[in-house]
Length: 72
Image 1 (cartoon, one colour):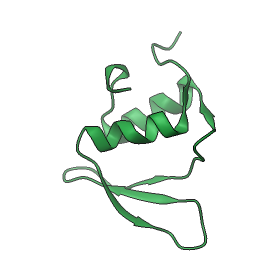
Image 2 (cartoon, one colour):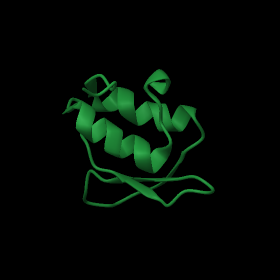
Image 3 (cartoon, helix red, strand yellow):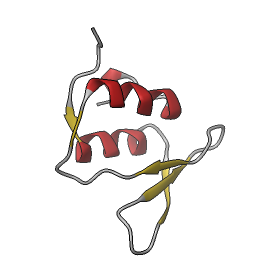
């Protein structure tokens, strides 16, 4: 059982911004947004605001961004 709750994409997107990630650039003609943070590989965000993100995907995002459940 995962300790991650399902969350809306707009809520999850704001969490990395709060912990120090910055918007790098928006990929023109697409819904993809690239985030950048020193010490991490760039992370591409491809979810729409209303999408529900489940625990498994949240765990994958956390592995790449350093998020914790408390950051949400």
